[in-house]
Length: 74
Image (cartoon, rainbow, N blue to C red; front, side):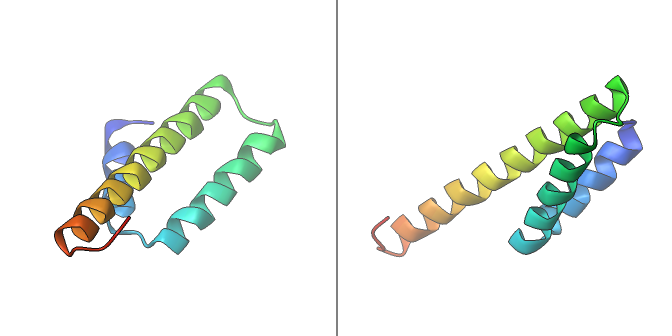
């Protein structure tokens, strides 16, 4: 992925809903299973998966911090 594509993907990811992210994960899985990707295509999908994983982990961590702050068990 070139820098502009990565920046656009990150911008989308930061504002995407959980449902939108999960739809994108399914699209990535479909593409991975198609076995018609070049090595560059596979690398791009791996990068997208890593960025998505990082975003989901960050959201989970923020949710846990907010729950503790609000006095919720978690």
